[in-house]
Image (tube, rainbow, N blue to C red; front, side, top):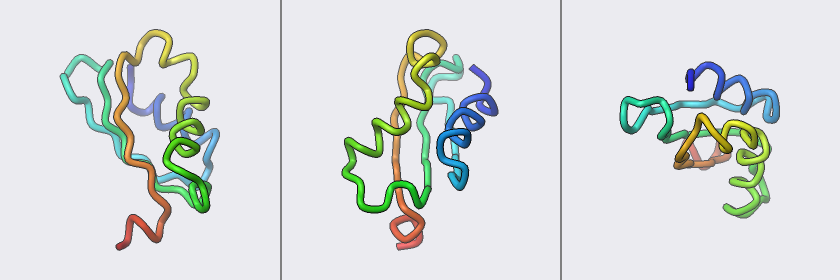
Length: 79
């Protein structure tokens, strides 16, 4: 899957998101994502991951086989 498409899906759900993607295997189906957004403030790790899983729900059924996430608030990312 194209990284620009993944970023667009995440940014549609979290407009302020800063997204960094790494293709873990070179096959464009195993990704590591670092996502920084104010939307994560006050949310648990599970809640943060659920936001991203919801944004990529269709892609996680097929073109994305694995997704590792670091979900941070801007304050967490700076520290």
